[in-house]
View 1 (cartoon, helix red, strand yellow):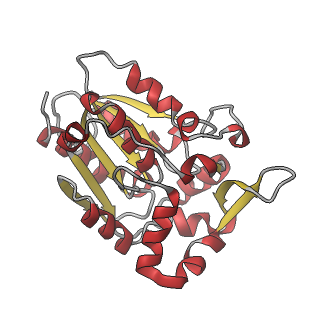
View 2: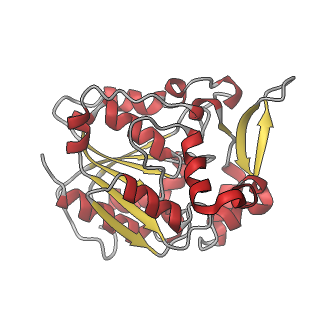
Length: 270
């Protein structure tokens, strides 16, 4: 059993990464959860991690989220999971929440985009502008490289520029982790994120699934004002806070693990 982590009923955690990352980013958290006896599934979204798909080939959100949809579809009828998303992965887990509410025991957003039905990527920028005004361009855009589709002026992918990666993602993480990440980050396709349709036929079932938000207090990407605004607009069942950078899975994995286990037990409706 992992040090200082209590034993609980056994749960199945499904972990979904954010922009640029892959299943590999969860290696510390996966180790801690499995050492406590829990089942852990780490997803590589389409064109991320070790998935061989070129990001230029990912045109729709359904394509992008297909690996998570497949895992959720293949769950046994009597099994519910704790679904966890980081950063932009909040879009993916919210889509799954609307599609599979009956298969989710608890949904956890870690410094993640938590926006209810009707999400689109433009909406996130509107929230940024609401908080920071015209400074949004100076805060966000210069740190990212936008990659055009060959032969066009259409931005097809995005990735944080190498010189900003530690500042944006890993300012409090071990240097070894940020160095490893710098060798593994891949561009995230943009087009699938511009507009995401949620199946809200059973909105009541969606709202019955407990939601937890984990705030990251030293985050240089998902600023505190933005996290607070999303929490205000769609209040979760519980909010935790960790003194981490954006990559809590690197900088505060033990604390993050404790929060997940505590929340899974607190909202155990099985």
